[in-house]
Image (tube, rainbow, N blue to C red; front, side, top):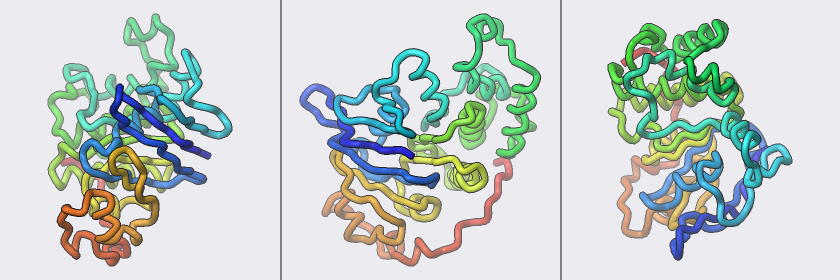
Length: 269
């Protein structure tokens, strides 16, 4: 389905992503982990075509994504939606309009200029917000919501694109633990219920192990681990984060991967 082949990104003499290769042959939830500067965000930005690759290719269903331009590139960015750490909402715009921005690539210039949306799109936006537990906030300005609620608005906007793949770049890095759990539960449900592939850059081992079926570890731009959460031992974690990194046995125990995931709850926080 998705083939990343020798993907490389250079910034002058600096190599941010170095010959990254992996295959996603079926929908799954994948966590990408690694220290700051490991190349995780750059990898996702290349996959979404927010940044062009220096070398290598991204093949999705026999289509070379790295060669797409113009309309074809915009269509890919709808199929491969992006969620950001800082939400990227329009703060003074109401929540439902922010969600409807997920349809911009499919609308005419005139409709975009006058902020005109079909009734069926408005209903769908509210249904998605309801699914994420925040429909009651639809008429509020986005800036009036908590960080966790804003991130769920960003997820709703991504779902409005009806994507096949959702890329989430550190989606919970700026959230408190309760909101982080709710956002991760939402992403997990999107994979389980919709069959969409979710690829998320994550900053903790425990989060990757609890919510992901597969974990990819990056270090200095290279993929140094690709396996199941149960295979993410203390030794592997040190290979990813560096020999000097400290990990408790509790945080990296293979038993964590066998724990039942928390109950799926999307109550508004």
